[in-house]
Length: 117
Image (cartoon, rainbow, N blue to C red; front, side, top):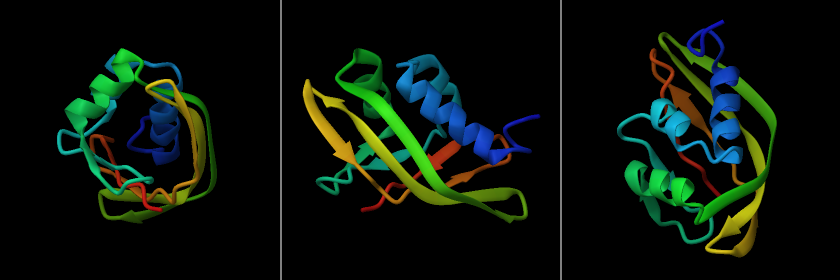
């Protein structure tokens, strides 16, 4: 089954790439205009710096537990809503977050995610 046919599978691939510190997989999954919103500060983290943070080991995810995910389809776009509990380290300092995470998929199953707090 393709990620296009199964958006939750694509979501799981994204989380697996974060947990596995797999920069190459993230590079394939993330849309060119991917933008992460830091749930602590509200600041924007564009795709390239995000990939660098994960790839360098500055941002490490120890656990990612998605819950209450639902998929809504709008023609060729799927929107996934839900909650995700995360634990990890940023620059060696531990963090824990439980952002609300709506994300969408294009027909190519690229990740466009916008965590909110």
